[in-house]
Length: 185
Image (cartoon, rainbow, N blue to C red; front, side, top):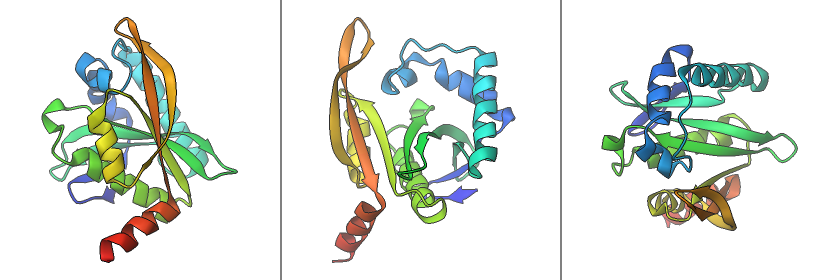
């Protein structure tokens, strides 16, 4: 388990399928994750969990971590995807699946906690994430956690009958050091 200030992160397991299934079938949650029409079956969620577990064995670190409150209540997950070994870079995808927990700092704490694990424990030097242009809450979270807006992919997603730009945010291990140095000044 990886401990944060507001959350704990633990490796996903098969028993998490019902919660993940519920989150991925909530259109409000999925709108802010960029897939509002997503409605995977429980079987597909179970397949995804198996893929994450296989990746955990291959990379010798979790591919997906469940975000829990300090009281052990599952509220979301963070998945590590598209790992590039040569550049030691990985994409993060963070989902707070319980809307009652939105806007309370759980996402920022989970993002900071996973960034620390990536940089300090897993020898990753760059992490990045993407978000639809209308998701201002996510953009504020990325910036608050030291991420830089690196690119805008124009009309890169389509839902609700229209195209949406997708913003890409990145954080280098050296950026984190810069943030820590500025915090101490």
